[in-house]
Length: 115
Length: 117
Image (cartoon, rainbow over all chains, first blue to last red; front, side, top):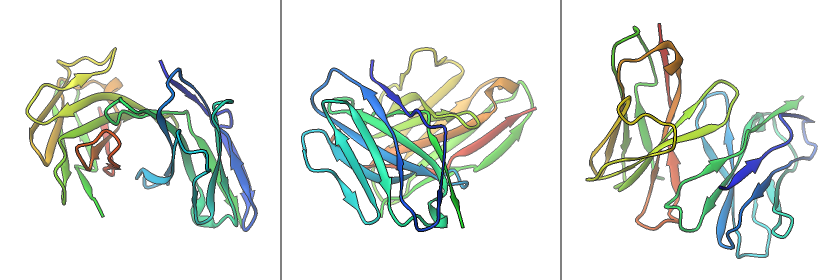
């Protein structure tokens, strides 16, 4: 079974600084997708960024970028120029190519942004 | 963009009663929806996959007779917590796949906070 591990229950960053959230996963599959979701206090799940395993290039969405290391099964999220609105719980998620969209989530990292 | 509406956003019920939670795709047809459960400060755990016109597929350890799922139309899936008990108190979130392909984007509802007294 696939597992997703986020080893940092809590992280904090100063506004305008950069922070990196860690995620590792375990799978025997070669084709899969990785995601970072943000869950603010409203509890709404918001997709931050997505990475296809077959792509070597790291995904980027404005201030959010990932460092995808397929061999190491590592998928970290870097948030640049952190903003107060970035404060939320962040979940790393895995989806197998043939899983029919079933997501396996990590335990989550609570990010605090200090003004 | 694709919108998933979940109703109610919160509900309080007495132990032994049943509660129905609705998940609607407002501007797209969702042949597949997913139901998750989230305890405070914990991750989302998949409970079941809801397929339109067929029986739901439950994850291991989830009681299908307790958590009844109905997906009678392409825009609506319901989760009924039957004979609710305090340990069923949790945050329930649905998500819907916006297309027929396995890699079609997923969108989440706003969740339902269930409190059983």
